[in-house]
Image (cartoon, rainbow, N blue to C red; front, side, top):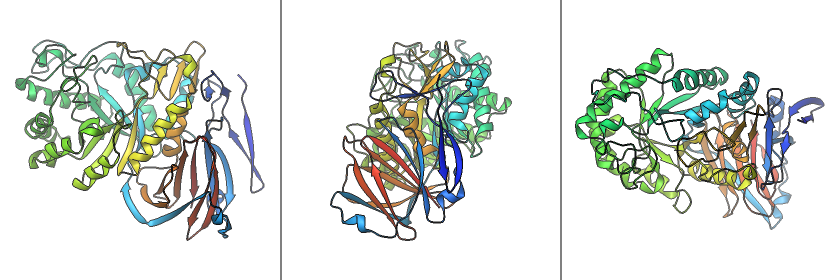
Length: 509
């Protein structure tokens, strides 16, 4: 495999940056190939490149750029503003919105198995790509409680019928061999810290009305307390392995198995049932067991169910006292108004809104590797969500193989990174880079700030980091380039050529 080293002359100092090792599978764009000896990365950003009147600019494009890094100077003249086709943006640091939790993905069984299918050195490069400096620096990890649809088989942690005392509760090989080591390694790599949260797809089949994991599937009322106890058993088991959690959702996609009879592992709840179960069982049980610090999130489903779901669940004062946040999935973003999120925030300003799952719901083929449009869908969702008070965005499978699995269902899907264990290499797709344009530069604790803009089809947002760095993200999903002028009253102006089908991150002190 040919590798590329990009030499950048920065203030008279030559800095080596690892560039994308391009491979074209015939899709609308390219993938970047990594293996045991090489992987592209972002080189450390020097203080000089973002201060003293300088800013650093990163670009990825359908034409083939991947986080291309340049350093430029602010201009004090606004002469370019006279151009009729120039989009004008103004940074307003004094206008501040939500504090960000971060960005990340899910450590499904499939993801963990694929990571471990690589050689040790290739695995190191993949983990560095997601969690280390020069990579995405993910700060959020979601872990399914038991099997999801992306596992080798269906299982829970107690499949012994009528074991309501959970005497046979036990973690599986998937936890000990795959997921726990990867979680620990992610935390070692990321100096920013990694928040881990859990979500359950289903209770054991014997706890449910229809006795299966499919279709219309609800928990039997007499098992409400055993199911709450199951959560405590789970957190205790992980604590014994020195893995602690930050949060938990009450149920993955509760409308699956309720409104929508499901062909995947699911368990249905109405908002009223979730409200009462949290108030009477899950909330008190977690608190009694010493897990009152966990951030409990409701819904964990698509945004058209807002704000009604939140109004129903949080309308109960007892339930509300146990709940920290509202979890949202990405699958109904197209065709629904993102203002739903702002409306929900205004009704419940003391509850954070976190995107907890996103995935390209199309069967993957090799000819699809490098599809740019799938990345744009991610970028659009992230920008819309952030501009409507969402505090973070979590991907689904971080890593799948060339068959879109392994999965025990008939629905193999896509992922930002695809492994080819036979060749001991992995492929970073456009989705990976769209997420990295946010996650690499916007650490937890950053605040979204004002970025006034004329009406435009260029999506944009801005942040102020804890280190007082300004981060601006722009996305152009059109087939024509645009000229953009960003004005900052305390710094000057930035003229940006926003190429067709591109995403940009601009960073300065």
